[in-house]
Length: 284
Length: 75
Image (cartoon, rainbow over the protein chains, first blue to last red):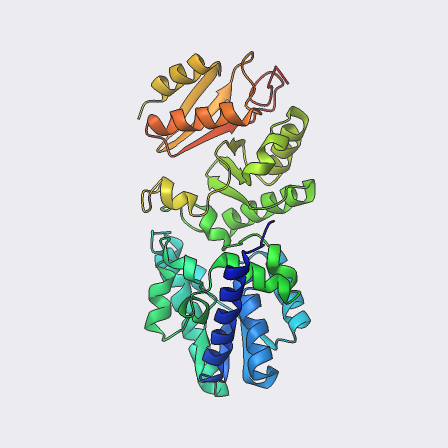
């Protein structure tokens, strides 16, 4: 993954990082919704550097929609940057409004998460609750942002204008292992809107993606759940290789073992928010 | 949005198979001899054709029987 920036842009990114540190100092102590992904890992790292670890707590929300491998990564990353963590169980799956999988599903998930974090913040005396949304996140369909607004959750990366590319660049400069990590939204995002979110469906997706990683699929990867059919989206650069017959057969077997009757490989490759496009809530 | 129209358009490109529509998703199953979808240029043309026919996604079904789906005969 190329995360080099032109000199001018690199300087701009560093200025934004200084602004971020200043922003955090004005709002300390902070409680961070933490997934261990590129954005929250970077934010946690800067928060610890700017405020010290006593003024920061990262909270991991655990649920069936959060892949087990990601929990492990989140713990690992937190340990590496010296970020204190708290793990809590979230129960969005018990909310029928979430389980029905409407187009604003993320709103109900985030409402649950931020309600729990508000409680933690009050109990432990944290002034500001943060998420890892960045400046690019404002362009896609993100109903979860509405829930964040309702719970006074702040998005400092977005507020200082840091884009994903800049966050990757700065993450690498800080030696964070997440700098090249593909984005990893929750497993429910693999189900088309209207397909009920159930634990067995999420497990199918998780098992299929894990199997494909073990086979050696690199970069962005999503197994989209279309009932009996799994539609695999992978990085376009990987497609040439995986369309080779023997590898394609291995891919099919791996996904079929996760419980799908039919397996298809998307010929356009990975697209963030692909099911938003299929569901007609964002442009093709 | 017509699966049959897309099938015919793909055949004209040298991609022979059947097309199943699931909403805006087109699922292509190759039926044997035909051009190789490992060619990025041809793949891009196929995806563009799907788009022209109203589909947001074109996916290649990977069959478990040799000679279908996975069989890209010119490889």
